[in-house]
Amino acid sequence: MNAQLEKEESTLFIAKPNLPQNKVTSLFLGEKYVQKFSGPLWKLGVKALPVPPCESLSGEERHHADMLLHHIGKNGVIVHKGMLGKAKCLYKEMHMEIVDSEVALQKDYPYNIALNGLSIGSLFFHNLKFTDSSIKSQLISNNCKLIHVRQGYAKCAVAVVDEGSAITSDNGMAAALECAGIDVLLIRPGFIFLDSEHYGFIGGCCGKLSKDRIAFTGSLNDHPDKNKILNFLETKKVYPVFLTEGPLIDVGSILPLKEEDRRIGNNT
Image (cartoon, rainbow, N blue to C red; front, top):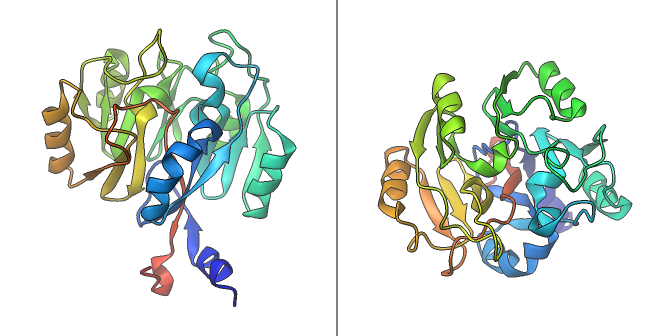
């Protein structure tokens, strides 16, 4: 059997979005950022799947994977209805079940946020007034609990640490997560690069690489809550991986998709 095919067949789609249980083998990343981060990820044995930009959005948002698609668990992925056919063909070749969003993304808030909900375990947080109906119906069929919050950029705003823990700088998200039983570290806003006019969010600059590892796009050295973040991760037995030595960059999240299948003894 071809070595690459054998490796692909020894992987599984991650059952719960953002929460791999084993070593991640592939993930979604905005196409603009693939060149910068694919090298460090490849050294970790992780393939970055490019998500093409959406010209209907403005600024950096058009390149952010968490604005352009939503992994609903296993092989199910909701993509914005204007996504290029070439990208969808690639995803389908990987046996993803691709569903187009009901609405077309638009430039202005809140018509840009339809896919930017936060999934953590069996909970889903978003401004449900603007969540795409395709996501709602899929999550309801998966017995997920949908929780309304004011924040439309829910995925951007929250770093998922594990099924019961998260980090955010958004007070409203922190309150909603805590109310749902999630242990939250509230940090100061800012200190994450987005563009010359705006700062990014903690969820947009990281993503899980395994049950006990989380990758950051840059170093925490310039963040005033560095020690609080590191201590919180340590208490959860989740260890940081820094893909570059530069500042944290909001790339629209690192979205894990597939992981090693330990059921067949794959330890590569």
